[in-house]
Length: 419
Ligand SMILES: [Zn+2]
Image (cartoon, rainbow, N blue to C red; front, side, top):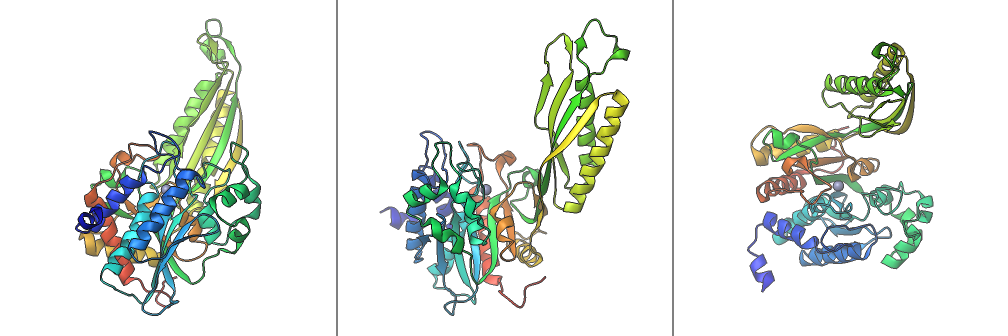
């Protein structure tokens, strides 16, 4: 009965219904938490495979826990356009991060299969098992496996309960020794539909945007040492206040990030010692996170900020130690994928496509090491993600899905690819 009713649904409505249904596969009652290789992940993967079967696609779980399926083109064995995203979540997650892109991939194939339409290329669907990296210390395990970048040492990493990834894979029904051989063959491109996780599209009243690059990031740890003293007894002119120095540094970081488009700088954590109402702060430690879509832009900003923080420290007679704790390069989405998505959005949406960088990391940046890759962003309410409040509209989902179907139909593998 449900199937009969469901058959009258539009593809976007069906996708939204499935997104709602997937919420029940959770490791926690009353919240959506679906960790890599958990029972809930297994059940969600099985449900995904069942939906693929409805579309006539024989999907399987691969050695690393990804669900993978293939819809052949006119000639069997043709190069494939791969579509997808991840179905693992953070703790107490929203229902759209990752799941949207996996179910959109399925919906694209369903749209083709409904009329028996075959293209010059195949379409592959993937629902990656681990993007968020919540359970084990590594992240992006699923796409790394497919891109041929999986490090075997990850199999020995343990979760909080002491279970190794190797044992978790075996319990999931996977073959840990097969993960290294998963590298995708004959994949012409990878495209991921994902919620924006930021407020830009909403602010500009746009349903979708085409991602140009996934930002690189530098993280620094700053330690400012002044001199603690009695808040009543030390005159202002004789102080070496570590917190007021750090405050000036934070404002400098903000001001420097503001002068360039797409550059962002954040101080997310501050520790103050001794942290008492009547003591001049003697030591402050804070984090700095700087991101940009171009590595050169980010390095220039980091270098500027480091010099100017040192100048503030010198003027205020405090000691500054800056340590880099993390660095990851940006991924520039492939020009051919950006151009193709832009054309599709303009055909479907009837307005110039908004191009924007992604501030968060995604499977796309890993798949981009294997083949040309790119992303389509969908507006999400308030830019909120990693939170049960995540929200999108069916109307926007329809624009995103229709654009992805259009892209798939117009996609050309091989020689026409731009470089
Ligand atoms: Zn995601």
